[in-house]
Amino acid sequence: MISAILLVIITIFLPPVGVFLIKGCGADVLINIALTILGYFPGHIHAFYLEYKYYHDQERMVQQTTAYNQPPGYGTVN
Image (cartoon, rainbow, N blue to C red):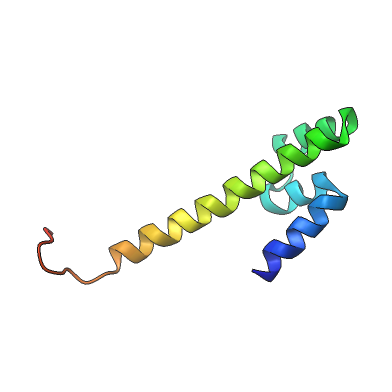
């Protein structure tokens, strides 16, 4: 939770750095740099979208792994 808050604070000031921290050095960072140069708000929108997608995918992955670790209950088919 603290890391997410810190990432949002970093992204508010420097959107490409926030994208770099979640995606690494790749096409998304270059796209974000270009969007930030063209306008500060498009860079923010792109960065926050990537962060939302990143944390949403992590949450979905956690839910899937916990669903597989549940013991079979009444009415389940294995």
